[in-house]
Length: 90
Picture (cartoon, rainbow, N blue to C red):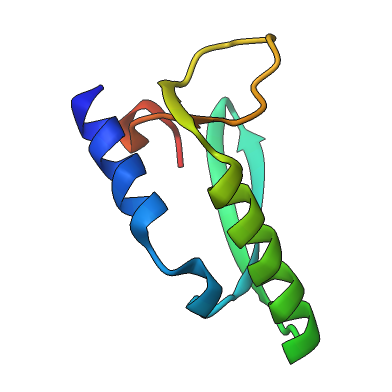
Protein backbone atom coordinates (compact mmCIF):
# COMPACT_ATOMS: atom_id res chain seq x y z
CA UNK A 1 0.00 0.00 0.00
CA UNK A 2 2.93 2.36 0.64
CA UNK A 3 3.96 2.14 -3.02
CA UNK A 4 0.38 2.78 -4.12
CA UNK A 5 0.24 5.90 -1.93
CA UNK A 6 3.57 7.18 -3.29
CA UNK A 7 2.39 6.68 -6.90
CA UNK A 8 -0.87 8.46 -6.05
CA UNK A 9 1.07 11.37 -4.53
CA UNK A 10 3.27 11.58 -7.63
CA UNK A 11 0.21 11.64 -9.91
CA UNK A 12 -1.41 14.40 -7.83
CA UNK A 13 1.77 16.52 -8.06
CA UNK A 14 1.86 16.53 -11.87
CA UNK A 15 0.84 19.67 -13.77
CA UNK A 16 -2.21 18.19 -15.47
CA UNK A 17 -3.29 21.49 -17.00
CA UNK A 18 -0.17 21.27 -19.22
CA UNK A 19 -0.59 17.60 -20.15
CA UNK A 20 -0.50 16.41 -23.75
CA UNK A 21 -3.66 14.39 -24.31
CA UNK A 22 -4.07 11.36 -26.56
CA UNK A 23 -7.18 9.26 -27.02
CA UNK A 24 -6.98 5.46 -27.27
CA UNK A 25 -9.55 2.70 -27.25
CA UNK A 26 -8.57 -0.65 -25.74
CA UNK A 27 -10.70 -3.52 -27.00
CA UNK A 28 -10.70 -6.79 -25.04
CA UNK A 29 -12.06 -10.14 -26.13
CA UNK A 30 -11.82 -13.66 -24.77
CA UNK A 31 -10.83 -16.67 -26.84
CA UNK A 32 -10.79 -20.02 -25.02
CA UNK A 33 -10.64 -18.23 -21.65
CA UNK A 34 -7.60 -16.19 -22.71
CA UNK A 35 -7.84 -12.42 -22.96
CA UNK A 36 -6.67 -10.64 -26.10
CA UNK A 37 -6.38 -6.89 -26.55
CA UNK A 38 -6.19 -4.51 -29.45
CA UNK A 39 -5.36 -0.85 -28.97
CA UNK A 40 -6.59 1.81 -31.39
CA UNK A 41 -5.51 5.45 -31.43
CA UNK A 42 -8.28 7.91 -32.19
CA UNK A 43 -7.47 11.02 -34.15
CA UNK A 44 -8.71 13.89 -31.99
CA UNK A 45 -8.82 17.55 -32.90
CA UNK A 46 -7.44 20.22 -30.57
CA UNK A 47 -10.86 21.07 -29.13
CA UNK A 48 -11.50 17.46 -28.08
CA UNK A 49 -8.00 17.23 -26.60
CA UNK A 50 -8.68 20.36 -24.52
CA UNK A 51 -11.94 18.85 -23.24
CA UNK A 52 -10.23 15.57 -22.35
CA UNK A 53 -7.45 17.45 -20.55
CA UNK A 54 -10.05 19.36 -18.55
CA UNK A 55 -11.74 16.08 -17.57
CA UNK A 56 -8.37 14.71 -16.40
CA UNK A 57 -7.61 17.87 -14.40
CA UNK A 58 -11.00 17.72 -12.65
CA UNK A 59 -10.79 13.97 -11.92
CA UNK A 60 -7.26 14.18 -10.51
CA UNK A 61 -8.03 17.27 -8.43
CA UNK A 62 -11.14 15.61 -6.91
CA UNK A 63 -9.30 12.42 -5.98
CA UNK A 64 -8.50 12.44 -2.27
CA UNK A 65 -7.69 8.87 -1.28
CA UNK A 66 -6.22 5.76 -2.86
CA UNK A 67 -7.37 2.25 -2.02
CA UNK A 68 -6.33 -1.15 -3.28
CA UNK A 69 -8.76 -2.50 -5.85
CA UNK A 70 -11.49 -4.74 -4.51
CA UNK A 71 -14.96 -5.66 -5.70
CA UNK A 72 -16.44 -2.70 -3.83
CA UNK A 73 -19.95 -1.52 -4.42
CA UNK A 74 -19.86 1.41 -1.98
CA UNK A 75 -19.84 5.02 -3.11
CA UNK A 76 -16.27 5.87 -4.17
CA UNK A 77 -16.54 9.61 -4.79
CA UNK A 78 -13.14 11.15 -4.19
CA UNK A 79 -11.39 7.77 -4.06
CA UNK A 80 -9.04 6.16 -6.57
CA UNK A 81 -8.60 2.39 -6.86
CA UNK A 82 -5.19 0.90 -7.61
CA UNK A 83 -4.25 -2.58 -8.78
CA UNK A 84 -0.88 -4.11 -9.64
CA UNK A 85 -0.53 -4.77 -13.34
CA UNK A 86 0.57 -8.36 -12.69
CA UNK A 87 -2.82 -8.94 -11.05
CA UNK A 88 -4.55 -8.19 -14.37
CA UNK A 89 -4.57 -9.87 -17.77
CA UNK A 90 -3.67 -6.62 -19.54
